[in-house]
Amino acid sequence: MTVPEISALIGIGLTAGVLAGLLGIGGGVLMVPAMVLITGFDQHVAQGTSLLVIIPAAALGSFTHHRHGRLALRDAAGLAVGGVLGALLGSFTALSLDEELLRRLFAVLLLVIAARMLLTRTLIPEPTDPEAT
Amino acid sequence: MTNMVSTSVRPNLLILAAIGLAAGVLSGLFGVGGGIIMVPGMVLLAGIAQQRASATSLAAIVPIAAVAAVIFGQADSLNLPAAAVLMVGSIIGVQVGARLMARIGEDRLRIGFAIFMIAVAVTMLVS
Image 1: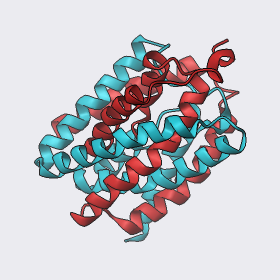
Image 2: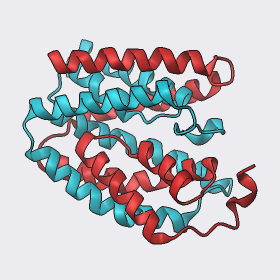
Image 3: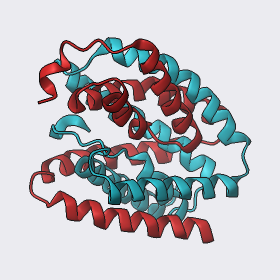
């Protein structure tokens, strides 16, 4: 990695983190397009990298919740059973798709999320606790 | 108000697994966490209080993202050094964002950000 690339990535991480903390939305939605448009990553690489970045943040956050007794481990296990299966399906599908098509589909996802943010308040996950992210 | 029922609710595991499945597909397909499906899903379909849903979703993201990351890694679609740099930035950023949350008018920020995302989406569509 070059110095400008490293600086850009630090900036992307910081911005994604700040916005995730502020808005309670995940960092992936912010990091993936930033990696594609700013650092010129391939859509697939941007998505794979984003997935890896999400893990420690989510682990750290859920550990904090667990300490405060807010985490229902039974419910999380239920989600994870379906989630892991879905992740397999989704990942293999994404990897089989053409880079440009995947980028366009991602853009549609962004539009859906943006529309929901503009139109409905109640459906948007809002952590009431600053530590929720 | 919803917090009062949260401790007595034992949501149906099948419903949770179905919500997880949908979130997992989204996560693997787009490289996002899936909280965007799980949190409203748990609130609306399983009657779980918002705060508990956020916490639970976060825990479920760990195995979901891990599985997807491994598959992307095996396909060489993962930039490890970039991920390390992003992690440093984002961990600092989240702390800052969480502290700023109380001070900024959230509605204005949300609308501004939604418009920004539309611009990003359009750029991705035409590029």
